[in-house]
Image 1 (cartoon, each protein chain N blue to C red):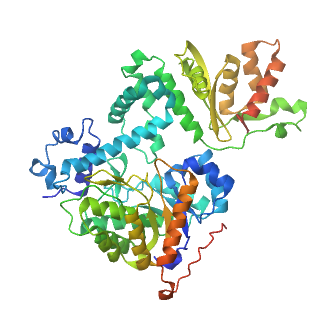
Image 2 (image 1 turned 180 degrees about the vertical axis):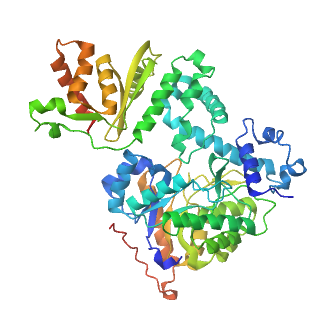
Image 3 (image 1 turned 30 degrees about the vertical axis):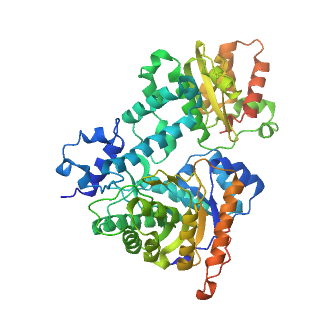
Length: 270
Length: 292
């Protein structure tokens, strides 16, 4: 008797995603009619039923591997092809894709890396994967019209403390244990990314027009983005900065920061 | 579904990321673009900016890979809502997806898997397509997939299955000529017989693409030029189906845009050489899909 559509599809999904291939996956199938895939899938002299399902199994893995490789070039360069292949094989067993977009297939990779044996050899790998995943998310993040110089210029000086602004909705700030920003910078300039220094760092990942970039934030800037995430008056942003810098030199520093934020399209008007 | 309700778009190319800048900056002379719906069902960023720019100049079609029309799972209503929103924003000439399943049990295999060709499956898939058409507020096109396995449970041919699903759901057909060729090799059937069996009034679009020869089987890789055998099958399709929009797909080892432009030009030349306009009332001029 042939299985119903749901059972048939569930069986094929298990075989296609079996870690060690279709043949090994079949060994775990207790309820197969007559114990053979041939009763369900038509094989021939050129390709058996197992071979045919195997074509889908290969396509499944390599399609996802290629897509994830494209999004994690620094991770790939760091651990090499063979380790990356093994990492994604194990990852897909633990975290098979559930969402329609293949972009989402790597959304749990950082969590998986944290618990993997690779973390002992490359202790910064978890942070690196988080930053590369953030780059994907920021690239596709929500749009909003960035606040520009021309919008602020007409505002009277006494009104500036009341200007409400927030960080761009696509922007992310990641708290990292390692200076991943140095690896990303090296990769961008064509150098081999060296092992990063072990140093707590806040890393800003942002999109300016269509280009995604990242850099480290100092404590004052990090404090500013903490209040900007929810939206704040400019006076509150300044207070967050001066809490870290003291008053000496602050106006010039804030002016410089604001100028950079506007150039990099990091703010939106509330 | 009435084929006359779908505009004739002419000869287009699948829009892929390496060509975004070229297409926007040089406005190449292709009639239309097909885009992969899921690549644009995002919150923001470059994909949507690109699509805005392309849509200002060209008709577009939304072509999905994750609707999973044949899955035993419930339809993904969130996915369909987002697709409907995308369609409302960009006003595609039509929306298409594949006659297949892409996942089950909530798991997505990101592949186009074939179905058992039975009356029961026809009823199941057709009822889902009708729901999809209601949600999307328009008839859709379903595409035949390349396949590497066939089911012992099947009681009909693939072409009868495709025709029956299209008829029962009253949707259109996106006939992938390369997929017919690939599947005919893999399952030992006559591809010409397939073309002859598909109802003329359901066919709204063709796909043309290349594949890889693995000896024992052909793989639908979209990484080669359209081979002569597929062009030959296309000529047969043009003679049978008449005025149908055609599109060249290339997804891997993607060449410079002029190569795709030339392939779309070859599709046009082949159409002009094989289309017998005197036998039909339809005009050969592609329409411009202007935005409201």
